[in-house]
Amino acid sequence: MSVSRIRMRSVGPCCRILAAVSCLSFAACYRSPVSKTAVLEKSPAAFVVREFAVPVLMYHRVTHLSDSEHRSPLARDLTVSPEDFEEQVRYLHQNGFSLLSVYDVQEALLNRSPLPERAVAITMDDGYRDNFENAYPILKRYGASATIFLVKNTVGSYKHLTWPQILAMRPNGVRYGSHSVSHPDLPKLDDRRLAYELEESKAFLEKGLGEAVTALAYPAGRFDDRVVEAVRRSGYLTGWKKGGGPVRPDSDPLRLPRVRVRGGTSFDEFARKVWSGVWTMRMRDSRVVRSKRSGDTVRVSS
Image (tube, rainbow, N blue to C red; front, side, top):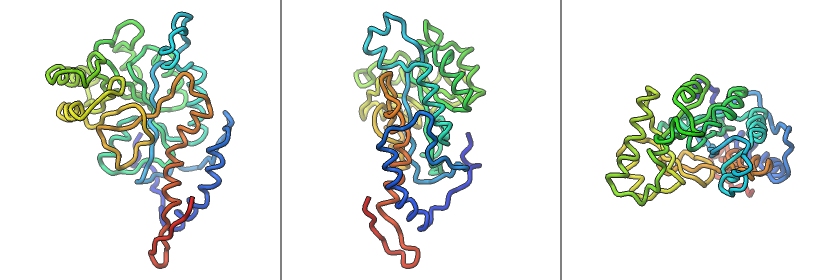
């Protein structure tokens, strides 16, 4: 998606005042149970803003678990059913969210360019084959972009994506990032092994994709300052962790937050997660409003 073609939103004083007033009504909607088919504040245009706040959703598997898998708390936590996933993507589509890749967010963050006010990015970790079999048809149906973080050693292995599947999804908005060579606990590695995990996975994906791979998801969300510096030296521009709120313009590019979507995430929880970016921006606009005439700062309680 090219955000440069989207109309830039006016963010003058009048708009800020309107945002402050609308914040109260939005808060009521945000706190209350959300209809699965409701269309909230649907707008005809995708306005863009420089002070964006984008929730980056973190998934793993999209499938039905076998009986044995269902007995595993970890498998249940990592797995969203295809029905729930479609319900979630449909909700985003109906409510006018722009569905981005992490490279759209990366470009905006590094170049200080705008993003849609109402935006979400979808990511999937580990490169499970069900991402192609179950998630991809849903993403394609709704014209949704996504990013899959691949582990080099599992590409082509049992229950994981093959290269033909990886390449087949590219024309329809699916991008790829690195998730290391073997999914180790990066802070526990010595410097040599750490560099290998980061550099070899990057080179492997770039050779297969024929394009630069500059986004990394930390395996299990584990990193420290030494790992971050190694990621920088290896040529990555963004590093994605787990946990945290929306990505903001002042977020650290190598410590970027993601919002977990678990197997047990209810629909109301999901709605609160995806609206958190809009909520964050409106809360910010409600705190400080500049007077059009004098330029004085007016504080507005929220």
